[in-house]
Image (cartoon, rainbow, N blue to C red; front, side, top):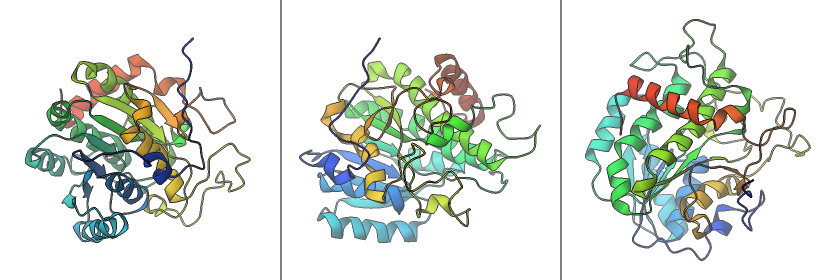
Length: 313
């Protein structure tokens, strides 16, 4: 049996802790949703280590302010903002088509959670489209720039919420059955993990490492904007087994996968609290569900994603 991957960091470690002593000078990183919350904290940590950082967000005004904040906090002025709407495949294609030069780090961080029932311009369910399909088209569209970088890393932000349900391959857009915002969210977060599993296999020869992660529970970021209060399962005491963190702690695992030399050569793995996650145990909201790392599911999702986005590599 393979021994789980461990690091010196834990649930209380911050993004700054993880990146301490790491030199990213000469590397270019991209963080989707880098205009606030976990994305901004992740971008700050990468910039503090010397990386040139692109924050890709839907709202350019917000992104411009975030870029100034990153420079002020880190002293690194090599940060730029770029417009990207993951729910609109035309926007994704425009973004990937305009990119030039190698890309060493891509943190697929942006996302929505428990939204009212909404559709994209292509008619897709919004959460699946934004959290998975948009990122799929983005990362696949940037494959060649990642491969050109040599040893590139992709960190895909998933959630413990994936344990609430698998990908609904026969009805991903909730056309046949009534829409459920939490099942839709779970599906999209399961898809994030399956993408990492399949991309790791397909791109191993290109030197691209792709891993997924659960950042832990962080209340107060933009992700919860469709909720008036934390869900009942949100237990600040931590007795439920769920990691409840501040933003700096929540960004730590993203930064670990994106930049730490401790994970050199690691790919296709799901992490939480800066460690490889164990198997999910019913009743404990931790770990990774079997269906989220199943290679057959991963291949099936890849084929479906190619069909729905027109992207493929």
